[in-house]
Length: 360
Image 1 (cartoon, rainbow, N blue to C red):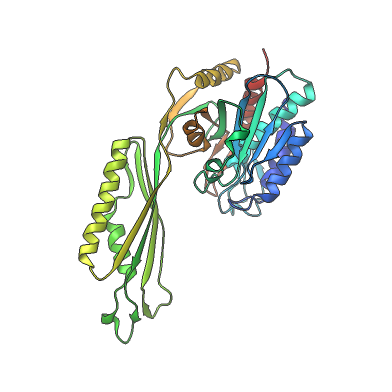
Image 2 (image 1 turned 45 degrees about the horizontal axis):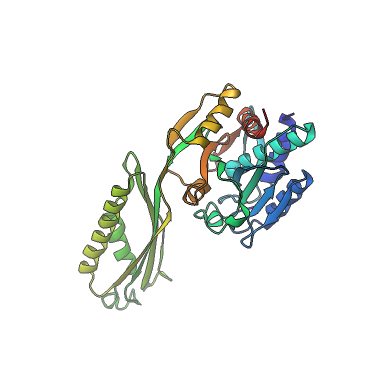
């Protein structure tokens, strides 16, 4: 039986294990121990992702979630505040995606404890999702037998279903100017920071249309205050649900770069654009979507289908031919110190997971 008290204990335990992207060893060891304790066959692929298999014949359903968190995610102190769980305000709470982890773990523990008949299932828990779905991109898919998956990684309650996700383009722009003493001969210098500022002011920013966003997320440059800076770097991203718009934004970026190169012919400006993940739409007749909505309806939870501006491991699974649907996990305010997790929503997520794999 799904237990609210056990859910709270599991969530509190795992959010207090630091697991920022790239530093997941401790949480991975904990999760392997838990899954093996439920009688699952647990493996790690060469990249460090976890894949667990239940017993049973037939094609399994894949339950997917990631194990890493964003910064500030060290030394999390979970606090119950009414019917929500939050941090002390100095960190995230880590509900993304440890709320999803908790729901899956509680589901498996519940059916194990009760001896509930269930369909075969696999669990895939990835590393480094937050840094660009890196774990899923490096997942050994020969270990995955499932052709349908539910990804616990959406914002909001579990009945929030992501039906569209954008294409994501990351970019790095490196500017090389010319150093000089800022107080003695600044006219001999060519400020890379000045050039970077010119680029940033000409690039689009924020929400460009309903399905398109653009962001400069990091700038760095220079060495000391009394030297004209020779090097600067701009790191950013843009995303869109529309492939034509993605192409147009790329042309706009290249146009800005060309214009600024003409303004500063003695500088070197190099750009690197890379596609982190690609757009998908879930068709209305998708068999996995039907499976998810049926499970929600059986619990009296009305499906709420929405597009998302974010990417998840579901983007990678869909590219690999695995029909994947992303659901909410009772988490709101992701990636901020205001993040919080609904306790009733977390219980609903565990019930939903159980409804997916319970027989009958």
